[in-house]
Length: 102
Image (cartoon, rainbow, N blue to C red; front, top):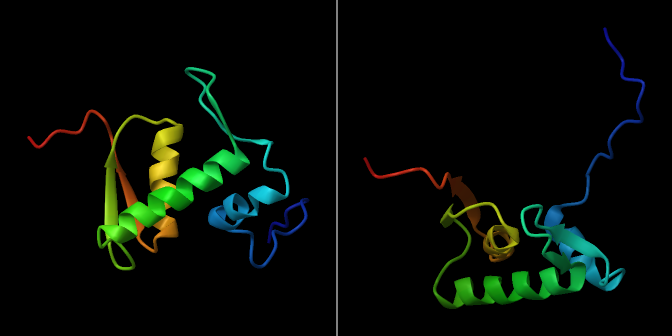
């Protein structure tokens, strides 16, 4: 049997949404950095956008049991949309930008 030399992971690691919601602890710190453009979102900005996205999706009837398919290039906006859908109680699947209906 092989044993890792590293400390074991916590039994219940923090969820991404919990980390976003905890933005008040270090809200000015960076949450997302777009490698292509250098655009940055602070934790506080990300938390606000995720909350607004979740509220907008819920207002349109999106919630638990629903799946949001995101067809967009990787960017901070993609992460905001995905986290907003998760915060609204739904699930997310990504579609590659080269995907077509053919």
